[in-house]
Length: 271
Ligand SMILES: O=C(O)CCC(=O)C(=O)O
Ligand SMILES: [Fe+2]
Image 1: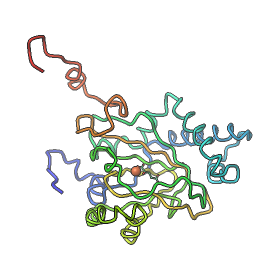
Image 2: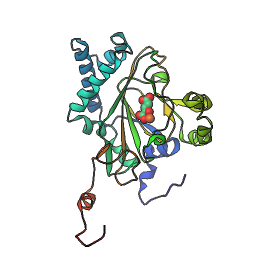
Image 3: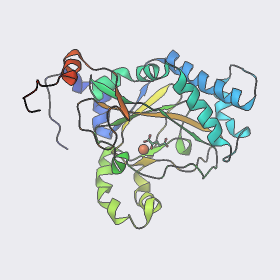
Image 4: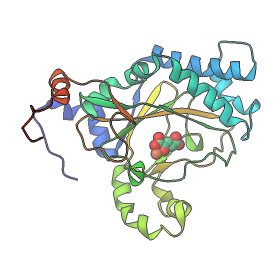
């Protein structure tokens, strides 16, 4: 990988060092009260959906949601929760505030953000909603995108997601096409010894390059996983299948870019 040094000392920032080494970094949420509000709204909408009365133990409810739903009724509660979050005007700015400084250091100061934040719920022993090993960039995402992945409960081992750290991922690149016929399971078996299941307690946030192979396995813990995911990229970096305006929305454009993006050459000049 070619890394061009620049004139900013930011490259020595601890998050940048870890991200350059591993392709991901786990940080403390930069806005803990905002994270608590997000979790509270997810829990509130789940309770409302189930007809339960409100209580304060959001952590317990989310971890134990498999006592109330099964794989057949999971999607309805997932939609209720993510729709409630998406309907709140504060949700996207608050989500950004969880990793704002890290994103500014790792990605840039002019950012676009995915419009539709995702929610994933993994019930214990549920085989029906898994994300087999993949890299989003294989499926039309720009390699410039990072994912901010936010657990609403403590995540570890198979309750969490796995990732291949940067050096191992690049070593295993050569095995990807060789395993194409066997599908994702064959690929996972090939790389299994090198994957890391990430330990991400509630209150922490994962920022990762989705060019790294990652995914999840059947949750063998006794609690349910709830996690949110959202993509960010530098506004002016190349786009792939996911376009500005459709999939991404600018959130921190600087004045020169605002004027430039609105500029049209006078008639007679070739654009
Ligand atoms: O949440 C997971 O287990 C996988 C998430 C993922 O693939 C992504 O956010 O790109
Ligand atoms: Fe992914």
